[in-house]
Length: 213
Image (cartoon, rainbow, N blue to C red):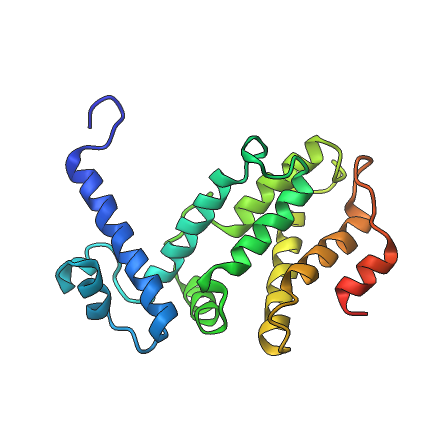
């Protein structure tokens, strides 16, 4: 490698890995996880079946890698200079809604991903939803939207747990269109105790409506 830039061979490996992930996600979304084989993925990516196992040891292993790739994209994309909200709290809500819109959060794939994440560690440090939320919580603390005396890692974990609880509610409670409102209301309720001096609480009736009360 010269001057910090990847070599041609390294670029080719990254491109192949990305192509496998893109093909897998598209096929999982179109056909379903169980109906998609490793050969289907490699055929779609235009590589030999054995190539898959140079990057992922099982079909299950590709799911956390796809999730990590998406979260890395989000981490780079949430930028007020590019038109995203200047408020870190608002960016937390945007990030969670963007995660929820991804095919991995559909019921079947979400179930498979959760199972994979319980047993695998393909997603490295800095590439998990909790890592993304920690950075946003710290930004919110820096600008006074969240109290500084709260542990950012703990609060990020609470927000993450709320998100998955709301996602499950939408999956199993037949409320597929309600997730953005549930996310918004849940964060607002949490900030009733965690909000800092720069955070302005919404009208209570709005929170109640969003929570489905």
